[in-house]
Length: 376
Ligand SMILES: Nc1ncnc2c1ncn2[C@@H]1O[C@H](COP(=O)(O)OP(=O)(O)OP(=O)(O)O)[C@@H](O)[C@H]1O
Ligand SMILES: [Mg+2]
Image (cartoon, rainbow, N blue to C red; front, side):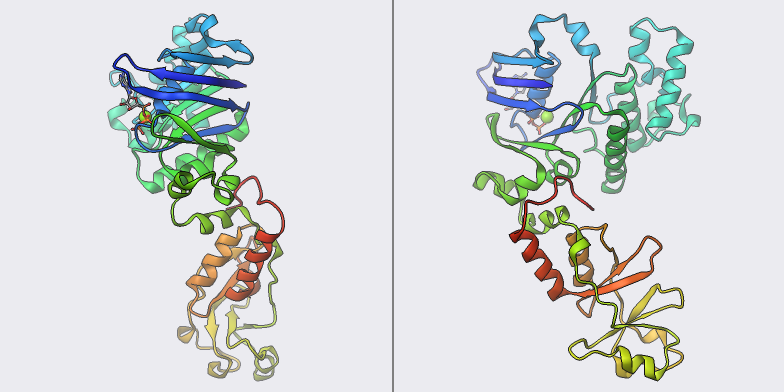
């Protein structure tokens, strides 16, 4: 565990970048530092690997004061990843990744073999090994940065806004990759970002800092969303806090209805039988049970529904797997106000009204604490 105990950083010009910060960073999980620009995130990260000397307080790694151990030994136990990857431009990808092992005295072949293995780990094609960084996309370079930091297999990874220079789609891919890697490798990761969505998605614990390097709140993301410590944290979480929080509630408890569903070849009797008072629409599925669209019962032609005239069904949610946020989104996107729940194969398992989603949200809030991890 990394323990930051009452740490202050005063730069020579008098700037207090970090002010009596205390954080217990748990092992083998991702701790995110988030906060506005200039709040001391980078300074905190760099004090952990002693690229910046702290002014007061102590930082310890597994109980040992970091200032009491040789700085090289300390840094070897901590990979460091920065924005734009910070690659050596005159070295090939494979040699970039092999940098630290080579510094540690590994032979060339062994270091390259390790680099090749890591390229695969982080989702880089082996054909890129001989290229130079400028011949890679931003997302690929970022992956190289992660691979390089992992090369000597350090227990700790320090990541300073590693994904902020890439577009949202690539960023999402890199985030998913990091979560997958973390499951596989179980590193202790300290991750800096100013993007609250990234913090919520990646963090097991999230530290919100305010300007002046003061800790505003340190909590799991679900708790941050349900119980922000003060107006600053609430403001930082933004206007969608309530909606975001729904990501932590499963759709498993939703009362899915199977009655207002008809197959595309339904007879007049079947349509009549499926028509329920108070439910103005029927969901039409293909013969495999996949959704096609909504219709008022009276507008359906028995035996062969005209699918071109159906109303869109929005975006279906994976019933029981996706969160209430996904179910709500599905119902909001649907012109009928009903969301479609599907199974792994995309077949309809039931439909649910906006009103029923609303009831599920209220009872989820009233019941227990939200799940520790977002469910999608
Ligand atoms: N070498 C330095 N000398 C003096 N002040 C510094 C130095 N480095 C950083 N600072 C100041 O310390 C404060 C915290 O800086 P830091 O880089 O840690 O912020 P940050 O949270 O990482 O910001 P950003 O989100 O913009 O990266 C800022 O006010 C910054 O101007
Ligand atoms: Mg910074």
